[in-house]
Image (cartoon, rainbow, N blue to C red; front, side):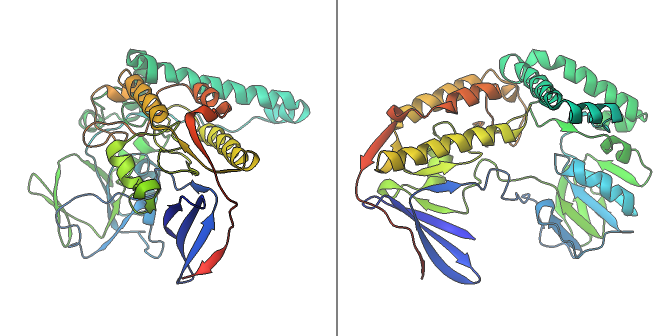
Length: 397
């Protein structure tokens, strides 16, 4: 487990501290790649009495597999991307399921089906058809970005699909009203599921929209004074997206703190490098998240860029390269200006935004635009410092 890292300017290396089998160690490395990503640190809700509950309670990202929930009364707090996967499975085994919803999400049918025998034979016999099919999926998803980043009014078509899907799946007008979103689709993460609504209409499942006042010893008390007694609580409350680096102690040039840089200065270059943190590269860093296409495409673009940086360090015999403040400032300003026209600025509160409304998560463009931006390393954007050779070693401390 990595606990921190500190940059040595004279040697151009990072001293990385970590725990291994209970022992504290240090690793000296030329380059530091942080691949923990924004969806890695669970966010526990700020609810009164959270520690008072006498039953089983755990975050969805810290699932307690030793707890058998079959036949139990279970509460799920949250209706986001984690909950939409958990709730249908819990609905199959629990005696009673209560879903505590703050905001109704947009849910679209998942375009999932079995491949036909003809398709399988075609893909096997003509490999180029696999590439064409993949290209179709990619560009179909890219088309959705027009509504995300160019004009949110273009999302009306998806909203039409979402409303009709809800109307088709949920016949009870009272429940349907609870599940009707009140914000532009895409402002919060769009959810895809063929089983979520089907679970919520079951007689042993309730959707609770009254705000939570507190956690009690026996369950959850809502603001209308009702105590919902349950055996277990699942916290499907997401992740610390805007400050996901807070658990790491990363120190760069002039003792600069990475967490401070990310939460206060909030500037970066391509979501990969940060000024005063030489030879350090972020994977799935700030403003590289998507709402319309595969993150694998973005990760691959970032990986190619990082390889170019490491090759430049080697081939030019650099001690370190540090992105220029003016380059990252210009880049960040451009990203934030583009985000003001996006669907994420349409008025809802989501995990894409910090408490003051800053969007440090989403990429305000098409994925091919990010590919172009990262395709070739522009060394003019970096301070290039030459110095002595480096060594890499692991030492016990």
